[in-house]
Length: 274
Ligand code: LIP
Image 1 (cartoon, rainbow, N blue to C red):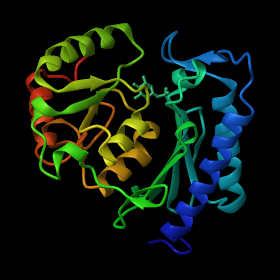
Image 2 (image 1 turned 90 degrees about the horizontal axis):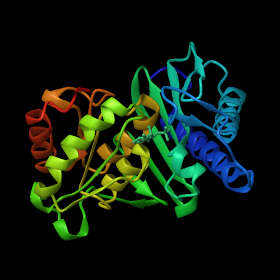
Image 3 (image 1 turned 60 degrees about the vertical axis):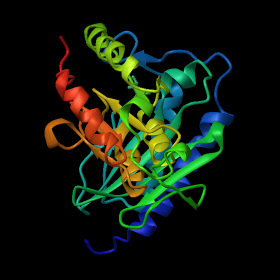
Image 4 (image 1 turned 30 degrees about the vertical axis):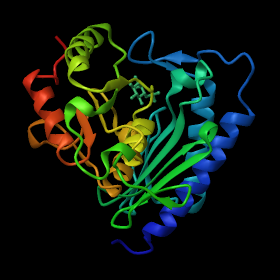
């Protein structure tokens, strides 16, 4: 661990900044909030509040830790010398935020020498704060959580009894393929949930609100904190064919279901766009 780096202190700063950003997003949301810009497609939107939230978090980090690196969804991409990197999604679930659907959050992951050691997902409208420190478990509002849904009784959930969360990309071609795969998965599972935020979906796996999650196209800022929280809650988080989780494909579920879900997705060659 590099000098003056204590994961507990990093988490404390992340939690404070996520809380401040969450308050800003709730209290200062303009009545007539509109779309400030679009990114990878006309439906991949950004609002002024995404930009204001990222600015608040970046300024808060640099005030305390000026030598750290920062990667943020809305353009922050700063090198550092400390070995510490912050991975920020100022609003994960931006479309939900725009439509006033309460399923959005502020996600901050902290890496040391490339390994995520701390993470927070702040979900203001649900009054939930999910946190994790590597090796120290996962928590929701300070209470320990486990990646097992109540009805699983801690046993692996078979695919046909699993509640699965997933997400779709912003490009029409990719959505067409994702729709085909979900259409084939539907008769093989309990049901599907499309929440609109990878960070919230990973937290839902971590507390057993869903049994599993998969998505092609989730970015480092969507995954950083949520993946650590799900892992520290006992879930497996990875990609297909034994790969690490990435925008190629991310799968998260407790042991047994993780393998079954990967098997289904590998069988459909799901990491494709045509
Ligand atoms: C969202 C992801 C979600 C995905 C959405 C979107 P954003 O991130 O968290 O999983 O399905 O299409 O990419 O753009 O709200 O930060």
